[in-house]
Length: 154
Image (cartoon, rainbow, N blue to C red; front, side, top):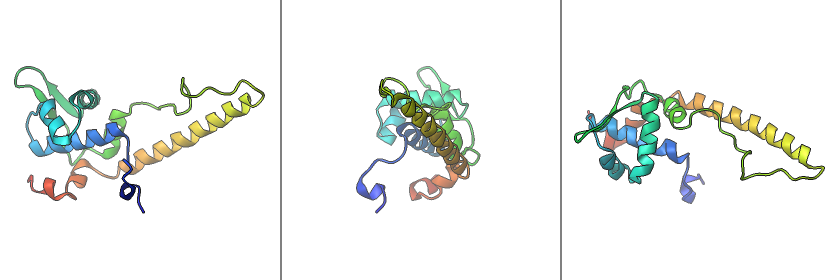
């Protein structure tokens, strides 16, 4: 039984919303407001705008202000890889074991905990690198062509 069959949400939420928003922008092929995109992808507009801001900073979308403003896909869907999208909304390496959420025990086991965390960081960094490499094999257009709704756009 797959994760999806169990009703478990799969994939980082920023990446999923970015993929949905970019597919809609590619299909719309025109300037589209964040409110319209939010309605199309069933997302809260504030969260979507944060994702779109990251995509704008990465040069994937163009943001236009004003009354008739909105977002426009800047890079062709046939050239835009899923890896690029993932990296745009998850810039830099993220720590999984540090911060306030985890505090190493203050006993003689503390050093072992720190070393275990460092090893886990290395493993997860490698897993993320492999994931990005795998995602780079697919373009937004290739994914959209698998979905009848988006095939009809041409």
